[in-house]
Amino acid sequence: LQALLIPHVNMASTAPLLAGEKKAGHSKASIFYGADEYLEELKKKYEHDHEIAALKNLLPGDGDANAAGVGESKDKMLKVEKNDENRSLKTNRLFPTANKPDPMPQDLAFLFTKITPEQMMYMWNVLTLIFVTMCLMVCLYSAALAFFPDYWWTCTLIFGIPFSYLAIQNIYIDHDVMHGATFPVYDWQKFLTHPFADFFSLPWEEFILEHNRHHASTVDLLVQGEFGWDPEEFHYALQQWAGDMGENWYKYILTVPWIPIIHFCGLNDTGSLFALEWWCHFPDEGAG
Image (cartoon, rainbow, N blue to C red; front, side):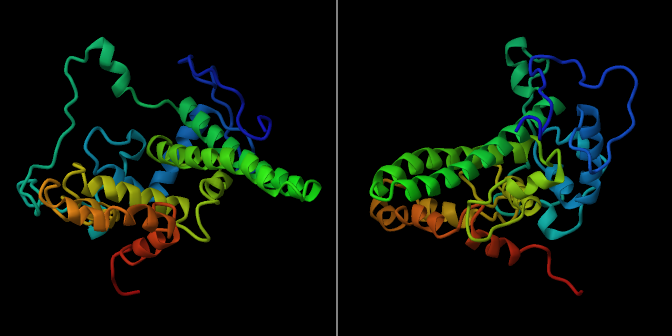
């Protein structure tokens, strides 16, 4: 697997992978990228998928330096809803700014350190390894059932428990990759990010869009959709619509149990119902 992916990089080193003279760029057919070349491709992809760049630049903080060349969009789904005073139309609260310490304490500096290109490539390596492992497990499970047909429960449990664990790690790493290393090192990797999630789901680029729409609209988890429509509002409505827990405890008994059920039915970031919900909102309505 290592030979098919990216050469090993030393995560503790800050030295560039491609030292010395700049080499000629790789073609799309090449299977090897260096850190510098990956950054160049990243900037090109942000220019092409400008909607993603526009949403990421809306988030509180310094934004993504690789998307800095893309201007603000005028589309409703690609901007936060606030008035001329930079306040929420829903709560009248100021749009938050990152409270970054200045000067930066040495013991906190690691919390604000930007992810390096080498680390981005490493994250995509791990995600790819999980996908290959899950595919191999399906093949081994089929072989086990063929050779040991009388031990269905044994084979299923040996397969199912670690497979469930890997599936959970898969979406965790999907989330971290989406935030920290948005675009894959190689184009084919975007097809293996969440293939076991549902019968159909959002493609990788739209998964990035909808989740960044969530973060742009909801900067405080206690106030959903404070700065525009949040694609995950319905999930939180089941937890929050009843008001104060003390005097409304019985209402939560009616709503909270539905949360895992709607997730199982596909109303989650990589599910089919969620894809339909997103496509009903994006892109903005218009002629053409």
